[in-house]
Length: 543
Ligand code: FES
Image (spheres, rainbow, N blue to C red):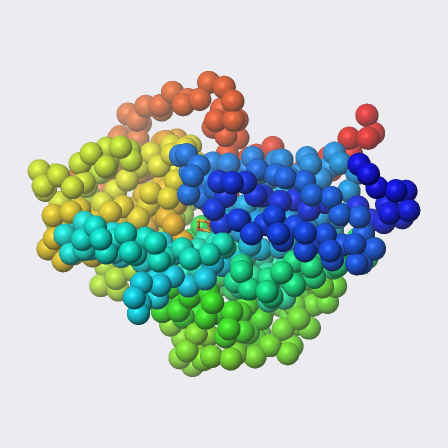
């Protein structure tokens, strides 16, 4: 490899797992950042090696990047287990790369620090600031309603993604970065540094320096990822009104770490955590503003009473020590405790005869008048069925109806695509309707908004109650009461479910077959059963 013995001997070998490719649009700065991580590793007396891993592209992977999160997790674990490395820097950012890398590193349990890609610069069109996803959905609805011409649409398109980096609203990437920082697996303040700031390059070098120290201290994920760390992360998620996707990923991460965690814990902590981050889609500002306002340490400094400040982090210090000097720079972005965006947290967990194992909704992103609503179900059996009929006036949809999409869950999608923010039917858009109650076993983009009930479990594709809904049934949603119910008699529901026939497996071979056989339901995190924490995996070199 061209190194002399003096350059390598006695140095911890640091793997830099880089989830970059020409198609990973959010990671275009990673080739440069790798050099900065290496700089830090050398400076601290380590020996850096770059290992490319699966670059999951949220934009370009079919049918959904989520299908491949577990593949990245599996690759990460085996790459770390099979190579002669002592610690690792995990380079990810675009949605599923964050949980994928971390799940694998938890299972390998080598010292690890996460280097987030950082958000892209704020978007701009004329004098307006544009937010990733959130403003796409908003202006696409206007375009569908005939209020926006192609020329303006192209201007919006060219102004909304102005640099390298991840979506700069509080979407899934931003949420996961903040959650992983709070878990203790990132350096303090790292989650929000914009991708192209010089501070981001300095932070990359800091990660390189710190991981060498972590190896000498034997500071492994298993020492950091305790039940208290997960509670802290959930509190941060709720205070941010973070992406609903964070729930699935946190459940999967906890499963890897051997920490018992259920949907009920999210709902319990959401009830006591105010939403303080005034960020789109729930609020007003963008990630650049959040960073300038003090970022995650500043947010956490507003809610120390809700956190376990003794939780250990990659710094070797506690979360409390990490945030001791933090201050909020801008009260408009990180709101004061007595003036929150919402008094309860960002995501609620609902149950009922339609979702016996739970489902989720983000009330801060919904029209308040729809949070208690009963309406007629309009059922779409699949995404193609929805695409074919939703805009057809003959479907006869009214604004009071409840749109139901099924067979879009972990196995039905497959991979649980972000189809849960069903579009408002075009005839209703033209009448000015911008929100309706929508229910599915799918996920929704963290940048999206609307009265969308998501992650219904068990999903329709395995015979969950969603499979029994018929167009014309009435469905009652009561978010305050945490209920979602199909208003038919129990006997009728049982009769319909008894007549339900399971679809034949979609994949006869390959990764799709593995996914179909092993992925768990949304309320359990959609990890592969054989990858959840179990007896220790023997090191390859014992064979
Ligand atoms: Fe990569 Fe949004 S597309 S974070």
